[in-house]
Length: 412
View 1: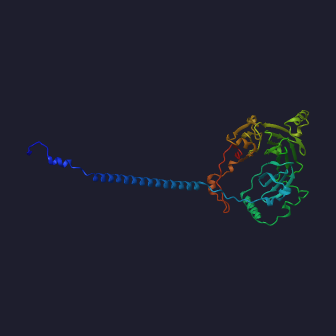
View 2: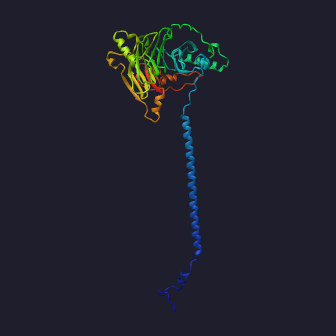
């Protein structure tokens, strides 16, 4: 039966066309092409990510290199110092296998103490022997002088270093007087009484004695026995008038000694029968010439360093517990009489591993610095070092104020 145009029946031609199968090859190709396209896009993305990572790594490497260069630029070069070995010029010190155990340079004097207890005094800058004498029976542990002389001028020191450097480079044998095997003369010439020579030299030793010797008068000498190994002695800046000094050592006591009999050996009056005898003789007026000893501080381990300030108003000492400063007896006003030998400052040692063991054996170094002698930035910019010397930047050292200077520490 035929269907007319106005009929609502189905169109068989259109039905047959719709029912025709759709080839799947094209769809599979499209699907494979799409998958391949996605894989290519992900590969490109991975390549981009890898390139970004490589660029980031190269950038980090460049940054690290720049930081290393900046750190290298920030590091200051060590100053090039002029120095010269002195062994060839000090043959008399090392005679008979002796060796140095203590050393002090002050003004135009260099004083060396040895393990055999001998003291050698040289004049600077030519290192000429001034005096040598036997002071102890064991190693010298420290050296102190009074009054403390002003330092040599910088040109004088530079000339001395250049001369010593030239002599050390010369391998020719020294004169017989400088040879370690040369015999010392039995009698030494008298030391001229000049301002730079009119000083007292104090030495301490592990034999428990303090020896104080005038450089110009061989009869003006004191020897005092403290019966314990001593590590340090420090003369008062006005020892010539007040005859006082401080000492300390393994006993852990900071001892003030005043007076003493010239030309004789005496025992300290701080413990035992010596203290009892001193008190009994003093009660009848016969013990004044033997001197007196007073313990100013004790109970904190070995004392390794004692240093008077430049003005003499303060005293710094170091023991196993730290650094301490006290007011001395010098230049006291009437309003300050109660401060005499009173402690005014204490800096404890660091509370870190190993410091407790180090505090027993180490020897701290202390210096009082005159602030007026330090250069300001303006002064240093106006000065130019000599062509053969490279100057280092001044170090700002802080410490306790004093009319004579500042205390700075090294080694603690």
